[in-house]
Every structure is written in C-alpha cells, then in structure tokens.
Amino acid sequence: MGADQSNTNEMKTQQQYQMFLLQYSKERESEHNQFGLVKLYNHNQNNTMICIKKLQTKSDTELTQIKNHFRKRQIFVHPNLVQLQAVRTCNEQSICSDSSLVMVVSEYFPDTLESELKKRRQPLKRFPESHIWLLIQQIVDPLSFLEEQKQVHGDIQPQNIYLDESGSVKLAEYNYFPGGQHGFQKMLLSIDKAYLSPILLNNYRNMNFKAQHNEYKSDVFSLGMTLMGVLLLEESYDCMDFQNGCIIENLIDQKLQRIKRSGYSQLLINFVRELLQIEENVRPSWNDLKQVIDQFRDKICNLIPFFQDKRQMSPTKVIYQQSYVPQQQILSSPPQSKILSSPRQPQILYQTYHQPQTLYQTKQIQGMPMKQSIYYESGQKQVPIKKITKLEDTVSKQAQQQGESSLEKTTIKQSETK
Picture (spheres, rainbow, N blue to C red):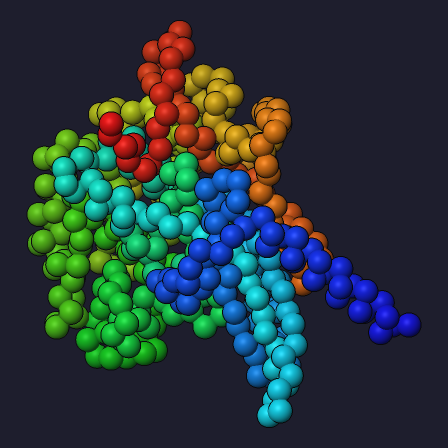
C-alpha cells in the first residue's frame, strides 16, 4: 500500500511539473557565466524567462547532498535574489549504473549591469546619482540578507548583477547551483577575471588556493571596484597589479577624482572609498552598509537627491555611529502608493526600524498572471522569510516639490531613445 501511495504522489508531481513547463516554450541552450550549461525557456504570455539545469548524480549520498542544498536555498526568498522555480528528481537506470537526474528550474534574466554599461558608453550617458544610490540599495539589501544566512556571494562584478524586465537588480550567489566557483577560484584556474580584494590578490600572485580572509569583506571590496567602474562607465581591472599582487592605490585615487569632476557628490565618493579600504578590518560589513541605506531609504526609493545636503559628507560617521535614526524621522512624507515591489501581486510596505510594521497593503491588480515559485521535491510553495519592498518602476518626477502629481517611469536600466 505504501508503494501505491508513493507511485500516486510521483504521478501527481510529474503532472504538476509538466503543467508548469507547458507555460513556456524552449528557446536555446546557453553557457551561463555562473550557472554553466542551461536550457532557456520563454513564457508563452509575457517576457519572463526560466532556465533548466540538469544535475546527474552517481550515488545516493550525492543525491542527498544536492537535495539538501536546494532545500536550504529555497528559503532564501528576497526580491533582489534569483529564485528557484522547481526541482524535480527522476531515476535513470542503465546497464552499468543506477543514477539519478535532478532537473532544476530557475528564474533567468538575460540583461546584466555589464550589458547596460555597454549601452551607456556610446553615446556616453552616465547614470544619474539618484539611480546609483538605488543600485547600491538593491545590491546591499540582498547581500546583507545572505550574510544573515551565512552565505557569501563570491563574485561581485557587473556581469553577475542581473536586471529584470523592470530594471530591478537580481543576484545569485556563486554556489547557487552545486559545484559553482567563486571569483578567486576562477582567477586561479584562468577561467575568468574577478575583482579581488587586496588579500585575495596577494594570494593569487602566490597561487595559494587556501587564502585566509573575511569572505564578506572581500565581497564589499568587489562592490567598490564595481561601483567605481559604473560611475566612470569603464572597467576597474587596471587598478589591480596581478604580477605584484597588490592594488594600485594611486590609480584608485585618480579615478575617484575623475568621478568628482563628473559631478557626483562627495558623499557618494566617500561611500565608494570606504568600500575600497585596503585594510580588511576597517572595511565596512554588509550590515554597516545597510544601516547607511536604512537612514536614507525613503529618499533613495523616491529618487530624492538627499546627497546634495552639504552636511552629509562622510558615510563613516553614519556607518559606525551607535544610535540609529528611527524610520519615523526618516520619512519626510507619507508613503506613496506607487512604491511597489511588483504590479502583478499585492505587496506590503514595511518600516525598517526594529520590528516590521505594516503601513499599508496594495490592492491586487486583476487579470495579470502571478509568478509562483514551486518546490516540487518538498511539495510546498516557497514562503518568504521577510517581505522587503523594492521599487516599482514608476516614481515621482519631482518628489521634493509638494503638490506635484506628474510621474515619470524610471528604472536602473537605460530607457530606449526614440
């Protein structure tokens, strides 16, 4: 009787999986920078994409490890993290072996920050500073969340910062799929370039595979190199002396001066400089950076130029100050209903000070399909640990002027010129 029940559950799971895939049409195979070889699928009714990766196991132990990996990953629910859609296991019997095949369905985003930078180089079109802070917020939030889960990203650079159809950031850690390699490993194996921290760069020169470093602080340095390149619309690899295993600090200073001459605020320049601290122990953590973002979150989300305040010059005073500014003091105006995570599903806006408190809930928009993340192995849908609001792509054109009612659509991605 137990076997009959197992077969029934297997058939039901197989039907769910097939019904899910019927919503998509296969496009092509692709070699992904982080995921490796995957098959890409387009949704039949909208522009969203998924990828399917096959993982073949040769033992029950390996299969159990992979299952446990994805069970752990399914709880990493955050609006700026790439999400699993489905996991399916099936047995493959052959003459020589009895192996299992794991089919993993994941979100897929073809656009990246790197592709956006290429578009902005010719003709030259720099990011407005308000969009830079929005980009920072949408990177710091998920990486702070991952640090809480004891998980590092491992390879922060523009090609690994994905952008969804509305221009919001999506990130995937280096071992999103089992067997993934972080940037330092790829450098040692001559697979790809990476923005290495000073400690890792020195270990790279000595070909030391067992570098001792704070992985989270190394990621923070990689973000600093990434932002410096974003602000100048160029790569930052020339600041790394691979032969001598050191960072060229004078060149970083020169680049920061160029950023200042480009019209960006001293606050932003100082913020980036903090990320690029050579000494690991004085470099801020993700939690430190999130505290800075939290104090300006409302203005960042409304694209209000808070950075023009001459009193806000040093982020270090904000990063390391002990007293935290309550969210009620940060909000200069009531929340606007246009600040949504997504127009396709109801969202709740939370305060970020102490315990989350619901401010308001948006109404469900009728007639629009909702995305669902299904974990077939456990038979349960993903449930977010904590709902964190991200931007909807429509914001106030002049939020600092009261009474202004006209809105313009803004995203991190560059709008197409007619």
